[in-house]
Image 1: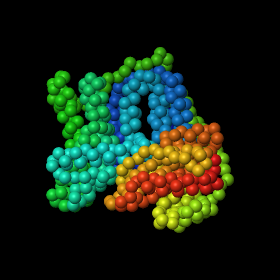
Image 2: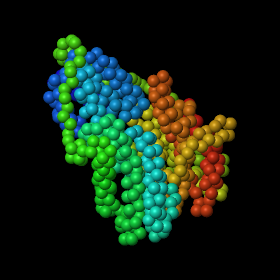
Image 3: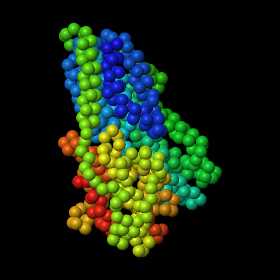
Image 4: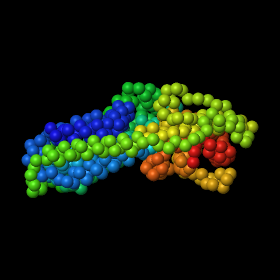
Length: 504
């Protein structure tokens, strides 16, 4: 009962991160398996219930250390708007409560069921976006290789496979992540049930990564063959969705075949013999003191609530919001460039959550067009922060063909680092430059941006900042280097004018 009290306190303390977790399970198909992970964790605990009772030892003071550390993670996660840290702190609170209740022996028996919850935590958006487009490129190249091996004439441009009669786009949903996350979870459970040496079980889990990539590439090739023979309808609708399920089941069969191959080299057991659910023996109770951990658990619950209050106080303090000019005052003419302002739909503005923004098309005398978008956030706490273009670009139907960092000199002699992204959609091509203008720093690395956000939130009590993005279309016969020169020239004119609107 008292251990349950600590769990309830942990849920209350990490409610913001846990609600974000459920939201991503519901909204992103890659993580829809997350709804089952807590049930699996609870079932594993229930299966071990007799051993848990016999393994309860003397309360450990290390539980207090774990809870305090998790409380610090909670505060950092709230300050830097890193929901992953908040979610990890919840697992830390659970481990600390177990230590306070039953010591190290009880922790050893509950470590796996609680650790399974890690499989339900999504990666941060900026990590996921980079992994997605890279997997898209790998799957596209391997899919084309399979098609060419089958003697089909195909051409690959970025993530678009040109079959001649049809252009097959390997979009974000076909990157393979929808298989990788749930298959990794399945592989982990299979390895847990597999009574073999640890090296073989680790191999089984890690093999889910290449298995997913290869089978997803084969799926892309199969879609290409079906489109070539029976038309474009093979690449969309229910059949395309059904193919995904078939591929996922095939991945699981591959893992079973892998176990069979391991057994042929080792103990030569049948597949039925090695997939029996393991019985868990109790662990000798740890510690020499009394086993009554009620006081420690109540103290653990109190510490968790104190950590929650401290995180709210730290993250909820009135932060410094420096004065700035509204983007409405941003000049409509930048040297040879003249602008035509536009706006985002209201629902998009609400979703992005910025405090002010600028969206305008600038045209020069040669009719070259550059789109400028800048979003300013007075505070980036509570999960509100600039959306990486690497997340938004695929959402607009564009394919990322190439991405790299670029540096060039501004008119004042300072160096500006940007992320250079080449994108395409059908026959259209465009070039994107973007960077994060954060409290006097122009940052192109999203990991560095999060680090400075955390540091400034703690030491400067500021989390304001902006994301700046410029886009230009690339003509059908135009070299991308000409588009680069166009964007660099425009940024040299525009960047100095951003200072009054993005405080340093």
